[in-house]
Image (cartoon, rainbow, N blue to C red; front, side):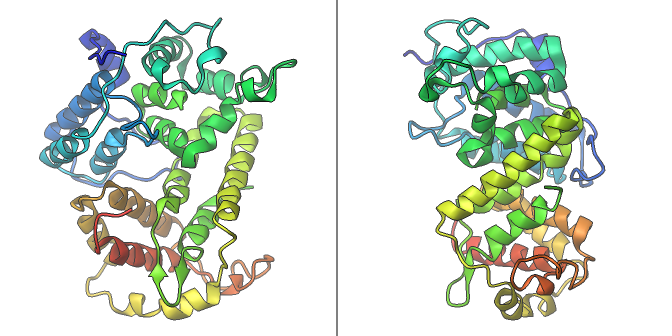
Amino acid sequence: MAAVQQTYPDSKLDALFPCPSSTPNILSPPRYPGFSPEAVAALTRVMKENYTKYHIFFNYKRLHNHITHRALALYAMGARGSLIEHFYKEDSAYQRSVVEPPEAITEVNFIEHLGDENFYVAYKTFFSKVFEERGLSSTLEKYIFSKKYNFIEGRDTSTQPLMFGRFLGALFHAFIHVGYGAEMGIPGMVVEGEIERKIDVFWTSTILYSIGGWNKDKSLAADFFLHLVTSSLFLPSLLPYLSQTSQVLLLRGYFASTLGWWVARGFPRLDIQGFFNATSHLLSEAKVANPFLDIVQSAIIHPNGHMLKIQRTFAHFSSLYGARSKSYFKDTELEGAEALDGSLFLRVARLTEEYMSEGTRP
């Protein structure tokens, strides 16, 4: 199919990609100081150009386009506009162009082409209209959480729409995309992302990534399971838009998906006490008054876009839970849980920094 660059009226793009708004929830991550008109202009230009030129997958292995994820994380951390432009130039160099879809998507054929990447533009057009008419809450409730768009009586299992499963699949990439839209008030992010127990999920995700990815001989392997952490950052921003029933479904589904990835990884042992014993030096080696400010500053200019996103997450979790003392989790059934405290987030931030400093992986 022929590559195309879509054209939209300026008013349409302005509505889809406005200046980011305030966060919808006190548990959502705060904005760092440093905003400027230059940064807003760079951010909106990047998002609009990405929307009109590039596919949601940057290759034919269905690996995801992260242009807007990095741009929004940079903006949220107070980066200057020239830095947003710099990394956009790097990230756009290897993207796929969008292609003309075989036909338009309507309510009639919506389910028939789910998962077909040739219809990306068609679904994007469909959801831009739906979002304009219904808004975020109603769009999510209908197309992600309703029975109609998940299970249809009489259809074969392989042809079920399963929109909720798609929303949480592929290491939470669609969830992350919509999460940015909810956090920042960016409708265009929700439009793109639609195509693809309690808040202690924060701790669960961090533990599985850090302690599950650590051993005393090789330290931390900061692999693609870091998406378990970065995706959890958006739960507080999405939950206010959902009904109570859908909130429960999302949290249960998210928790189950997180554990599913841990199982798929081979049930790595969670040696909590060993991890805390082996990483105590990371707390005493800090040479600055606030070590997280140093971590964030380094992450903003790091060439690997994942570094900024995960360090932003750990910095926020530390601000929420850094004062939590040992024994808080002692009555859980998790072995070694009595050793957990709020220093977990600084420890794993330092280990992630050390791992990624060896290159631009993962």
